[in-house]
Image 1 (cartoon, rainbow, N blue to C red):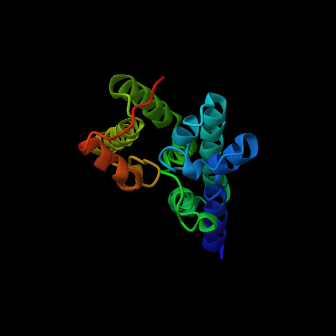
Image 2 (image 1 turned 90 degrees about the horizontal axis):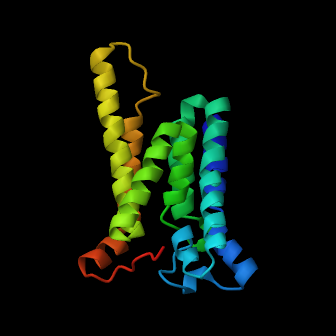
Length: 203
């Protein structure tokens, strides 16, 4: 029963399409008919409203943050499941015929619930890569890979030095799954990058 409760509120929270709702209410535009058609913050940015894009980013992050925090407090044995389900809720929302966003902001919210250090690492890497290459997709993929690699080596070294090293139920496996999912949600972007059709972000 507890597992069903965790899955339910995690999915429902993750599936709220804030980008679509905000763009529709404030600008009257359907974000799915603009730019890449994605409902995330990057495509909302293409409506011309930076404030709306930032608000979408914050809300998409919060909808990933709160369910995980609640699960950690009341159902700690299911916290990894909550992390994954809230992310899957964003990319496969029932209300939009399972056609959601790419999940980067929601992933960031999950990271904040798990580790402030990893969150800062992700943000720093994302900004640096964006400034160099100007592609949001490249920043997202590279940053999620960086978070996984750092966690992998930190866990491996920790277990080698300290035999009873406790690393919160093996985060490296969870973060590797997230990396694979983020690559999956950016398949079209990867195709566009290969064919030099990916749009740059002008900041």
